[in-house]
Length: 159
Image 1 (tube, rainbow, N blue to C red):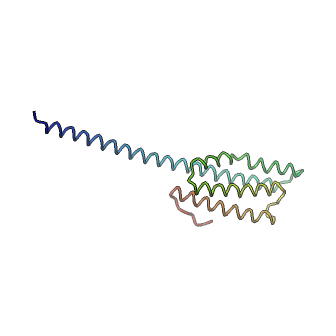
Image 2: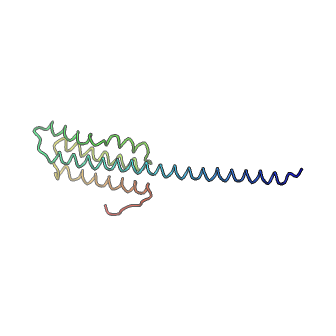
Image 3: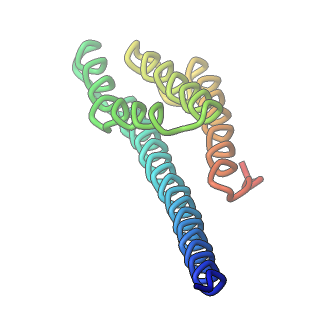
């Protein structure tokens, strides 16, 4: 019996199967990478949006009239809490790389410092408000740049 044709056929089959498995594995890796990028993009968008909404809602409260200090404090804290920022922050902690999480945490804490100032009675544009706003803007810009870098987009250079 001649074994050469049989061995050639088996060798070809093994090569074909191996090539298919390698191609499938590479395709799966690309899809997983793309999916992870999509998840991070969604989480980043949710977090940045919650930060912006909380800031705007707190500013609106700080600009409004309140009957008492306790009513103002409660309204500012509720404006912060109602945006879903805590949930968005936890999602960021779960999927973001270390440098993005660190920058996001700084942006979060800069907004909390602003919340606490408004809750104490600071007014928009006051001597207490202005440096806190500047600090928040800087933290937000740094966070956005790191998020864009992680997503492969690159910095805007306009902030």
